[in-house]
Amino acid sequence: MKALVAAEYATLDQISVADHPTPSPGPGQVLVKVEAAALNPLDLALITGAMKDIFPVQHPLVVGMDATGTVAQVGEGVTEYAPGDPVLAFTGQAGAVAEYTVATVGPLLAKRPAGLPAVQAAAIPESGLTAVCLLRAVGLAAGESLLVVGATGGIGLYAVQVAASLGVQVIATATEQDAEYVRGLGAAGTVDYKAVDVVAETLRLVPDGVDVVLDLINRGEALAGSARAARPGGRLVSPLFGPEELGRDVSGVYIGSFTAEPGDLEKLAARAAEGTLRVEVGASYPFVDAVRAVADFAGKHTRGKVVVTVP
Image 1 (cartoon, rainbow, N blue to C red):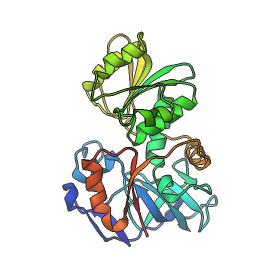
Image 2 (cartoon, helix red, strand yellow; image 1 turned 90 degrees about the vertical axis):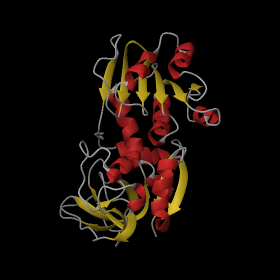
Image 3 (cartoon, rainbow, N blue to C red; image 1 turned 180 degrees about the horizontal axis):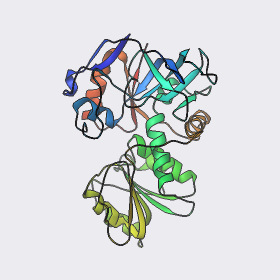
């Protein structure tokens, strides 16, 4: 089969679409004939080795972790799926941008509902599940307030919508050009991070501070700055890593990887098919342009997800 491959830790222009062995599903797995795959920021770090101390990979690496397509073969013991079933999946740290990939039966694999196009389905798993798990990790509840830093990225777009659907007052960072769009997702207010200080403007909008800060941009000590937007005793949550002490009894919750619960992916896909969850695909590339898709994803600001379609 053909796959987008990194032969070793390398710069982004050294990856290529190349021949690669077609995987076989093991017990509890399915082989998926891929129709579309989405890119995520972690893909870039896995290619270059920027996070190899935390997320080491085996080479050759097949790039990508979000895929949708149809089941081509089922492994031993699989009864929930059959060949021909349309599915979407988080495949782990690798394997998605290829003609075939393997997915494990469980919370990270779901049947694709009728009416959900492949390009949109591919854009859901990693980002949508991460958003759900981040908000769950801090017990976000109706009536609370939330600042989303990085609201127009893949995870942020879902976080704004999921939080708003819970009855949360959402403040979202967005440029002037994106502000109306983000409010359309459910944000009660926006902060133009290019024009004003995000913390100061958030405190102007919510003088006592928000209950929760979700920071999808900063890492390390920089998260202490974002935490200043939280009320005393509030919470900060991030998919990256930050300091244990944030001051003013603000607690930090860091999840390096998400743990989805049964039904999470099915619910996201169902909402997307119904039109109650907006899936934003900022750019779509054919498989032959997969290398350029990675380069553009790394070098351009794109609202929403970048997807590669596979013939």
